[in-house]
Length: 76
Image 1 (spheres, rainbow, N blue to C red):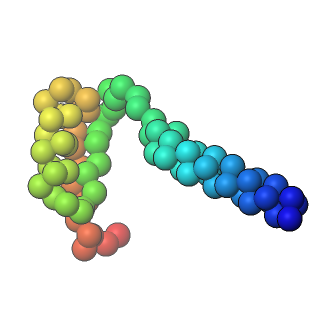
Image 2 (cartoon, helix red, strand yellow):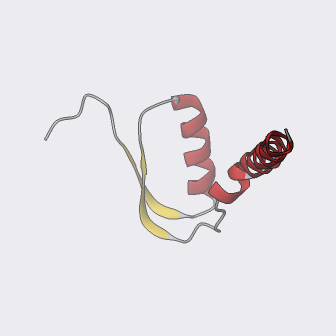
Image 3 (cartoon, one colour):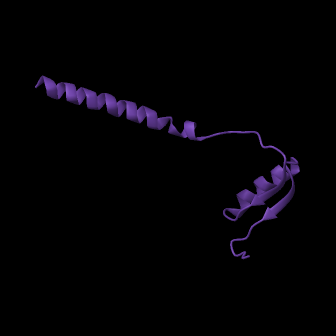
């Protein structure tokens, strides 16, 4: 009976640590760097309105001298 209590206690501690660790996982994955000046920016297709606004903001901040917009249908 005592061994079951120890095993259940160990499992409970493990689960609490796992949940606590998973809650912080997003902060470990996010990396924030200040953008550096580049020769060109490439805007990929996707949610075009959000990307276009962010690309325009970066261009106005002189993050790059040129903007290239890549269309999903472009071929070599």
